[in-house]
Length: 128
Image 1: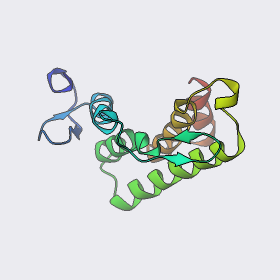
Image 2: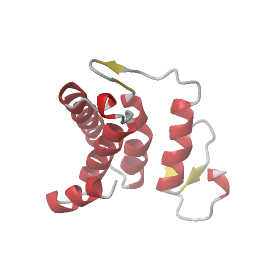
Image 3: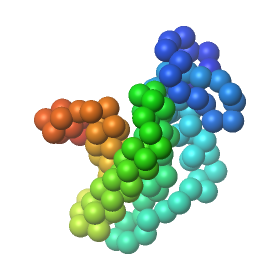
C-alpha cells in the first residue's frame, strides 16, 4: 500500500527497493518491525518494545539525508527516554500501554533530527 501512494519518495521501504514518503515508509517499516511481535523488549516495571522507534527515526534520517552517527544518536536517545519513563512512571498501573512512552520518545528523537527547537519539540509531544 505504501508503494502505491503518490508523493515525495524520500525513504525506502525495507526489502522492496521501493521508495515512498517519510510517513508511509515509517508506517510500512513499523508494521514489519511488529509483524510477528519478535522485537526487542525492555522489562522493568512495565514491558516496552523500543525497536518500535526505529522505523520512524530511520525514515526521518534517510529523508533528511542525515549521517549514520546522527541516526544512532537519535535512536539511542529514544531508547534512553523510553527507559527513563518506564523506570519512573507506572504507565501500566494507570491503565496505559507502552505506546505512550513510545510516541513521546519517537516524537522527541525524530523532532531533534529535523532540527526542531525546544518549544516545537514540546508541542510535538503535547499533541500526542
